[in-house]
Amino acid sequence: MVEYATRSLRAARVGGNLFRMVRPKTILWVDDEIESLGAHVMFLEEHGYSVEQAAHGDDALALLQRQPYGLVLLDEQLPGRRGLELVSEIRAIDPTVPVVMVTKSEGAETMREAIGVQLDDYLVKPVNPRQVLSVVVRLLEGDRIREQRVARDFVVRFRELEAKRGADLGWREWIELVAELAQWEVRLSQSEQPGLRDALFTLQRSLHADFAEFVKANYPLWVSGKSGDRPPLSVDVVPRFLLPLLKAHPSVLFVLVDCLRLDQWESLKPEIAELFDVEVSYHYSILPSATPYARNAIFSGLFPREIQRRHPDWWGERDDESLNANEGELFRLQISALLGSKMPVRYEKVTSVAEGEDLLKRLPGYLAQGGVTALVFNFIDQLTHSRGEHAILYEVARDAAALRALTQTWFRDSALRAALREAERRRVPVLLTTDHGSIHCNTPATVFAKRDATANLRYKFGADLRAEQPETAVLVDDLPAWGLPPMRLGVRLLMATGDHFFVYPTKLREYQGRYRGAFLHGGVAPEEMIVPVALLTPRAAR
Image 1: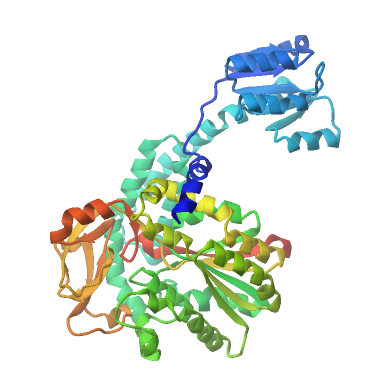
Image 2: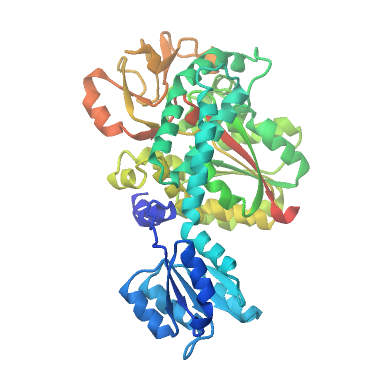
């Protein structure tokens, strides 16, 4: 994990556009008929650009070595060497300068060559001044113009979103609000507008108390079935979203990316949309919003109390990795019960690069055989858990924006992406979801507990648990009413709200220093509980 993160640091930061170069509004126009471009040059200068001219490729290279230019307009037909032959030398001097080919040739071969050397645009003579201006503005000022538009749109929308604080929202309204805020988080992270990002963060944080009260009042009703209109929960993912696919298609791929936040999903969605038509829904993670509970609930279709009742040998009292040891069998039982007939069911968990490579060798056969193939990818969950233990991981994933960038970098060369491409190639639909999200925790909350309390930082089981400040946590005395197995007398559940993480009075400084800024899960926050369910339909299948 640490070696992978070290290799990915530079790519993640560049890929996430954390370092943005502001290029000058100067243009180098290289053309051997420079005297005929007077009207074009004057038009560009009237719009605020400075234009220098060169009639020969060597002259252009000399100018580039003396100073940076915002953009190079390069004629294809030059004395001595073709413009295309100069591109590599221009890139050697300034690797990031946009280069636009201007040529008389409309031949397909010239266009292919231009694309092959990764030119930023291609204009065919004769060109009028406004055509040139539009390309220049797009390449030199496009990012700034888009940022300004995003900022204007957010300012207008922010007032409407802020008005939802304190409102009596239903589960649908909470999904709409949280999903939109995640979308804004991704959009604003690429802008040079720290004030707007701070305003969004403040709004997100201000909603935490309202969300905790909403869950506290409604969650037991959802579990009991007494609420006539409950949201899709973890237990509903397979019957509500996967079952219709199984009935309509001979082969289906079911993907669960452990611990995927909504903003991470939003950052991956454009790349996935290159292969699939994407239809996004949402579900609420059950509580605690942690893998042993939420992921088991997805694969079994059962709340933990029902898993323990039906399969007592598979469910212990303590929270450890063994609770997820039987997901494959639980999944097979659920599919069999839902369909009432046998169907090929495969379940695999990918926790390393080697396991991913082995999976990809078997996957074509799985998809060809039909039935349902379930894949669990653990990289993001491993990253969030390991981040607090290793300085390099903490540096790579310092905040939500950096975590998104690293997620994108991982995805582009991951077994997950390769599996999706294989499904798309074979025209197999995919249902992609997660068990829970995570929240960036910065606020310690002191709790009092006995020695037998579990060690989790966002939720704890134990006797006589209590929070020093009650508003920092949700306290559950009746575990079965919350879908959880009964435990020994006096054991209760405490789940953190907002961005709190639990600390003990005797280890206050140690826990603060070690876990402040960690991405955690298991508590009651929209970032943990409201998660995506995406139907991916291969474009080739349309």
